[in-house]
Image (cartoon, rainbow, N blue to C red; front, side):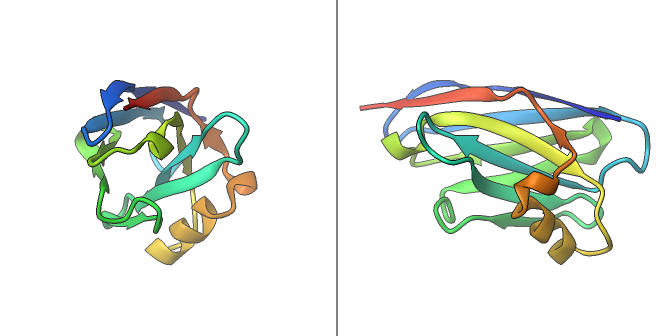
Length: 131
């Protein structure tokens, strides 16, 4: 069992920066792939970023590439999403996700792009960007 807890959401003005965190509480070898999703009101859930925790390989979606950075601190069992140059379109509830996948970053990316198969989810943290 993996419990995920997001923190760090809030409100920021357009063009500003914000960081969110996801702390995992889990037994060893229960996850090796983590990711971020977001969902705005009336819109589909959208994959944002993923990281294969074994070798620290990050992936970000085209919609946030160059602005968002995913990272992790294995010692703290925590994943981070650093968000810069925020726009109104980034306003959403941001969710943390985790699962155990086969070897390799490509397996992690594939799992995170197939949200229906992801086993563990956090409750979400709200990010609001204002003009």
